[in-house]
Each structure stands twice: as C-alpha cells, then as structure tokens.
Image (tube, rainbow, N blue to C red; front, side, top):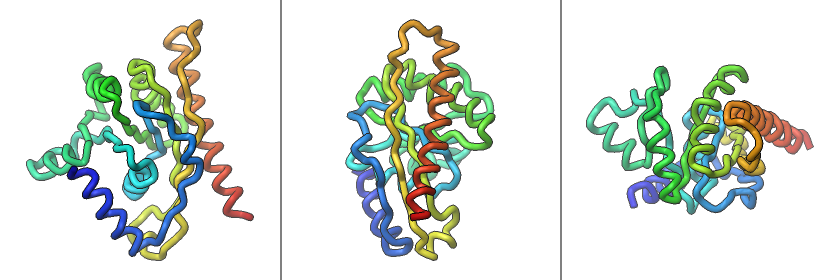
Length: 202
C-alpha cells in the first residue's frame, strides 16, 4: 500500500516538474518473478524505472548506509528496499533476493561504474541472484537528466527495456555461465543505449 501510494504520488510530482517520459519495449517485460538490472547513473533513474514497470513492484537492493537511522530504515523497507553491504557482500547477501524471487516478486539490482567494475558487480550480484533464483534478467537503460536541476529543465526521459536474458545453457559450467551472462547484460546495456541514441538523432 505505502509503495503504491508513494510511487503514484512521486510520479505525479515528477510529471509536473520534469514532464512526461517514454517507456520503450514495455512488451518485453516478462511475468514475475525476474531480476531487473539497470546501470545506476542517478537516483532519478531508480524512480523512473519504478514508474516504467508498474503495476509490478520492484524490491530494490540498496547499500546498507541508507538504512542507518530509524526513520530511513522504516522508509526504505516500506519502499521495498533491502540492505546489502556492497563493500563486503557475503553469501547472505543473495539469500533475501532469492527468497523474494521464490515468492514471485521482482528484484531490482543496479550495478554502477566502468564496464570492468560493472562486470564484477554483475557477477557477484544480479547474475548470481538470477541464476540461483532460476529467473530471467531484464536489462533496462535510463536516458535523461542526472540531477534535479536538469530534471527541472524538462529534458526528455526514456526507459528502454531489452530482451530478457534466460539461463537455459544446461551444459555450461556455473563459472563460465556467470561470465557469459554478465557479458550478455553489459552488451545489452550498450545496445539499448545505442538504440536510444539512434532514435534521438532522427
């Protein structure tokens, strides 16, 4: 209830401030459960991904620092976020998202950084969670303002989804499969951004 209310309220506010946004390839969104992955370039991206995927709700993996105070802990958990130690993610870091997937929910993971570091995050996070949870990965790319100031300039905002990435490679060893699917997600990010850029230049 709180998640839906907050999402709808923020959506109305951001529509007034930043204008409408475009969702591309929404038909590619599979039935839950699945892991949705997007390159994390700005906090604004997380909000618009939540708008783009509704009526589904995203259970966000968030850094544990955002849960430090009593109020923030309450707020983040009511926004379907759960904490993870990104500096030292142990085996327990994947237990909760896997349990959420087994309950039929959508888990959101947002690797960031360079291609090399993003690949590392993917192997330890999204790809492992999807593999263990036996669900596909849905790649998504956000293109739009990175700051609140840019948002007020009403720049065009786009969320583009790619084809779901499945784990049907039964004859591939797990280590190689994680590497292969990590590369597939990174390639999907680059392809989606290229497609967005192509539509902008028309």
